[in-house]
Length: 533
Image 1 (cartoon, rainbow, N blue to C red):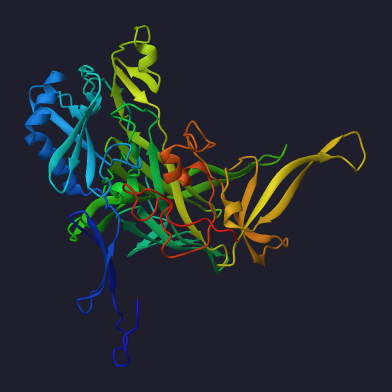
Image 2 (cartoon, rainbow, N blue to C red):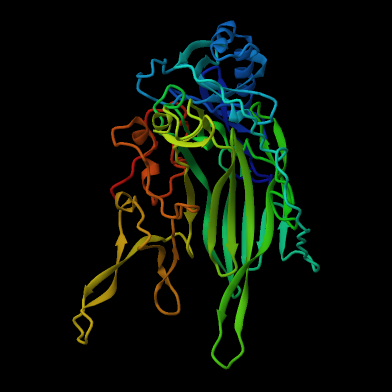
């Protein structure tokens, strides 16, 4: 933003950053919206753009029109190509070992058979991959492996084959109204205030987050959002080796926002917010129910019962900002959770449908079962769930009581008891400052504590004002262990951010994404170095 000269008081310049795709060429521009002028025009050498929504349509049309692909389908017992559903996938980077031209705009396509049960994901056409040139709009290569019969058992996921138990209504009421207010894009709840917007790449961005401490608005976070995520698969077969989805960087998770249904995807007391983003042509498009806001009971905040005295306990409340993005078979649910005690939590998880592989084995007693399950688990007859990871990175630009923040470590240690008495050992905490970005890139040990501290501000005990940072994987794996790939693996070098749970770097306006600005087919990620100091 920039102010106009004197005489135009109150008017501000408005500019927009634009990323364009001209064939296979990526161009960045800055446009003056007020004066309708292009301020800059910069071709980005070697970059590949995101997969666009119209690419999904193009891929399906190319497959449907291909007589070559139709002939290959006959090997799999499929005579009607119109029943084949395609999924466009990024091809990754293998330094030429996959035989693909690096400067071409390519997608790999794996396919499924629509059998009429409403769940084509359960019917993979295994060991068949089409490589499509999006510029030429044609298949340039078909990669095949041994023919595996398409699993044909009906597996609807809409409940048509199940009898759901009868349940009584569960009503959530707020008879006196909401405890929060929404003014434009600003949310106020109890002592919290923050701004909310939807980004086409990373989804919700929360900014200028403050906490009112007895009348004083204290800074907590300038900006927070999903930074990026990676879903790498561990199977080396022809239809799987390239699968390592950078869902936000390659596809745009904000663009793929799934409208939230009140009473199912969010509680019945939720307020649903429509959000407007630019579509792939640059036109504004509104996503209904893109974000849900709701307050919930979250257990006791405090409880203590002294013998012979009345119980003392208080209720915990939470404000939740929920967003859901559907990327192919997976539906990702992200909750930003504000606690009334000053804590901010992020809950991320996935529902939807497992990405599955067709195999010969029907049960684990079949002759091929051991080989069929080398890279996954047999989860249904002739269907393997392939071993993979979901690794999320969140970008948190924290301002703990201001911008002067430092990473501080607190490591519990066992030390000899030198104070006397029957004990031979003691528990002590080794506290120290982490003074470089290289040292701050860490595999997090959940037995330790990491603080982002403002050493120029003290609490009433004289300790620096701090927020504790707790990387938490959640679900069945609360402690994340990092990437499951060998150090010489291509994906390990491209996506080194996934092997450590904590990264602390100095702010730079161009360093917003851990996978780089243009990760599709890129050779090296991240796009910036981890600095010495």
